[in-house]
Figure (tube, rainbow, N blue to C red):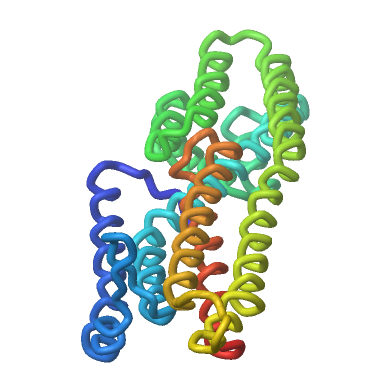
Length: 295
């Protein structure tokens, strides 16, 4: 998927698409599960709770669909940025080697674009076309990377343009840049390696909560509720209320767990929406399957 700049207008469009998608489960709820919704409403300490698992799963699906357009586009954008960061050291090294072999800067750009390909290869091919049309190299590079608005690409274009205009030791500059960008990439990989166990722990915590919640419900709460009315048995237990409370708690754990993954990995909580959607889907699917086959 190509990089999509997240301008204000596009963010609004993605939110609107999410709102339209989220309306689909509500339409289904109104036409097919309205009776079950009304019958499952309970007043617990002044708070109204919907005890139907099907209804709760539907509103969870609605919430996931609302987040999905923005989360998917943001995920692919970040994947694009990650690929760019991985390709930059090799691109600089390839340019230096091409120039050392006697090629011109334009020929070197074309050679690297065709040899390495990837996301930056497409950008370099566009820059070569602009150069062949008569545009100076600095302007061609600037125009080729401007639509992405990525700091790494802008720095790379600026390094090549400045070294080219100064007429200095361009090969040495490119080799130094390759080492610097390679060191930055190595640091990022090391940081990700250190964070990965913590991110996996969040997923494991959500799954562990689901297992414990379903165990408590289907091994203790629901069997005890069947003893109501027997002399000497404990007071009234509504298994639907307990199921709803544990379900809502699981959704909250999943949502904020995903946001925490995004904060740790990318430094922005919004980058974890895709993880929140995934964990909320795990909770909803688990409770739904338990309701279908264990109850």
